[in-house]
Image (cartoon, rainbow, N blue to C red):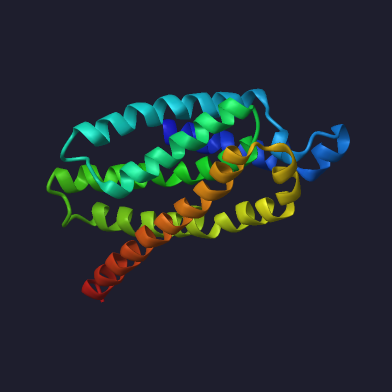
Length: 197
């Protein structure tokens, strides 16, 4: 539920222009300093969600994965930094939009645990997960990195050094993780496609 609500809110905020250059030109607030009531809700909800989820990942042997723990730790660092500096919400929203893939990941895990890995729904979900992952967690990082590039001067001017490192470093590291996971998904999808041809 968290993933669907947060993804929808992120898309809404990013596409309605709340963090656009036009909004910054209108009121003089640089994009890296902009926040909205909705962005605060997203950041707060996600901080709580990831805090609970990382506890489960670290305490439940069946759920543990070092890459997932690193992913969650980086997300928590981003949320905490955005709250501490009261800024950089555009970067957080770009990153959190990628949670649109989570329902596919969760369904895949549940089907696997239920012994349904041979069913068509498992295969269809896996192929859909791979496509959505590629779009949301690989391709969609392009606009984020463009935003970072265009507003880099403002980031350097207005963000404290630690926040600059978190807000610029975390997306780059998450992108690398996303690409690694995507490569594994594509390899799995290729195997499935070969089985069905």
